[in-house]
Length: 310
Image (cartoon, rainbow, N blue to C red; front, side, top):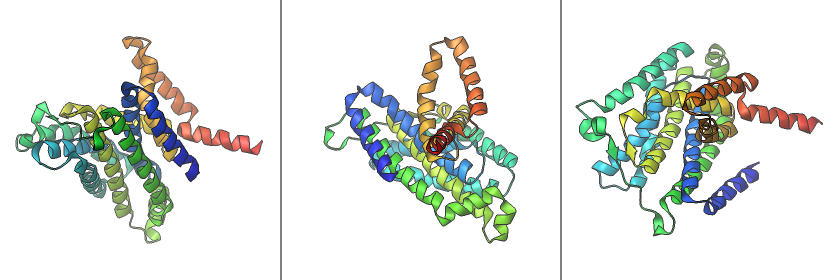
């Protein structure tokens, strides 16, 4: 399977040279969605938590890149290191607050974070750094050698980071820490009786998710060249949850499928007109959730198992 995944990523990188830049741009956004959803697979699928805070983590990554590019002489590529670190710190802190409570309380705490984050960006004390309501602009980081277009380099960079992120996530899930997360998910009291520090484990999962989502936000800021408070609202959090549920929250493959869904499915419904597209989008989402409770990845897994038995 590792060989199959490697061949798939190499093929995707090679195919990017066969399409015009505007198509590559759209697939880059799908890859960025997938990186964010990998973090949510760890948070929601592996550790069994619930969160609306992903819009805030996404914004943390974007603003880390924008502040670095606007207020410091450092290269923007340092944001690829700093954004996950800041996202991990924010996610871990939020996890320590919400990790000892029920799913309902986790939802409320993360909802409060998602609502407060855009307002925090407008706070006068820090608006000289965040740009306030006007946001910040940033230039795309220079392409090494200058032999590729910005869109193609952005796609290859995001694809490489997705491949590394999937490898790290797969190893984490199969490790002792991953098993501790799943034990805390299945029965927190039994996990605590076995010596697992449930709150710390959940906080670590929240931190890892924050790092992934912040990295995705950083790449998105590179791609669009602008960050602003209105871009990181509560709707973005719900949108990511839709992608997670449709793709499959218990599978890393589901993160990739969810990323493709978030980027391209709205195009399929947009042709029905502005009035009906949102209604059709909602109906198809409900139908997909009812028909495939484990997401597209789970449905494909069951189909593959059935074919093997035959």
